[in-house]
Amino acid sequence: MKRLITLFKNKYFLVTIAFLVWMIFFDTNDLFSQYQYHQEVSKLKLERDFYQKETAKVRNDLDELTSNPQMLEKFAREKYLMKRDNEDVFVIVQPKKEK
Image (cartoon, rainbow, N blue to C red; front, side, top):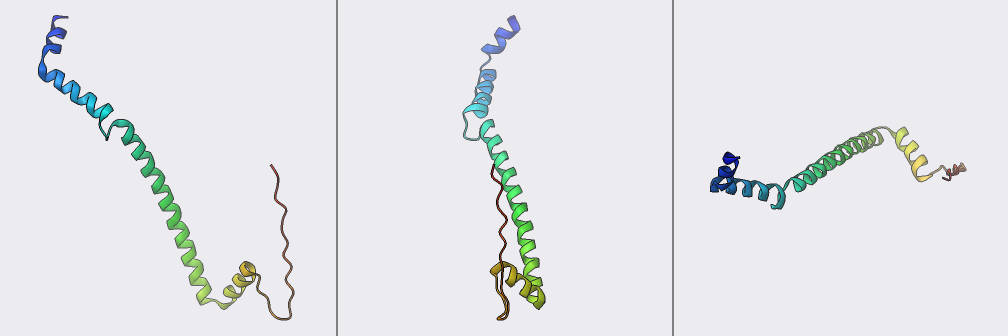
């Protein structure tokens, strides 16, 4: 007990405790903020990976469309409903399931 009292009377100990409390709870980079920053970085990394995959897919599709005329025609027919002069296009829409 006597040792604990002398420890609390030590000014270096008190300054160190005050500094740790300040850095952990009151500083602009406290533990809660660091946790939020870490969560945001993780989320942004997932988004980055998703967009890199999408970019690679689009780049692959672009290479296919510019090098293969049959793929270009198929893409135009499916995406933009283009047709030849002697053809009719029928669009079948699937009904959406209601929740």
